[in-house]
Length: 259
Image (tube, rainbow, N blue to C red):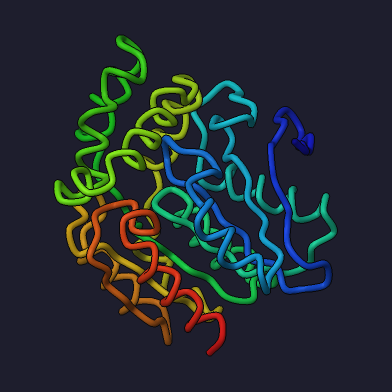
């Protein structure tokens, strides 16, 4: 698998699809890796080049000493694009990946064609919610939080209907590097773009899950109201809407990219 060396971090990525086609880049959530986008990659690489990567501290990418910031994680994206000589991409990020997308939309709009912000918020949680999770992982590892996180990621109905997908996602979560996870928890905890997202002027699609307790629809509606001209869609899903409502997710992204 290919890597790029970005300063102190080795970043794992995968670029596939027809040469010369526009590039659609996917950014994973906290506690997953780029495989969370397997279904989307299979669908979209028919007509687009698909760039996926493991966020610093996740998957096969390096878990450098933390804490991290969203700015640092977004600059990893810019470094990867520079290394691959990609001037501009469509960017789709979910949860933490969506925060990275917001930072890019405000600070590096010249690198983006269109922006998709999924199951995310300009501010997610508080120190009172994040610090106990950080301590739980430090003391008990990833398994200490895995079951509770999975309950927030998928609705009860989906956990029953597609137990294999849920089990696979939980396995990825439990295999996440604890230090990398904690470092990224701090990045999410400390990010607050509620006053800045109005500065995003690249075309933007916001996607929420109607049953998402982690980033409720109110978070998505706020983004859509603040970002000039943004489109908004709500799917029948919890937090990982691209997995739980795969067809609806793909339809929304396709319609937006083709608009």
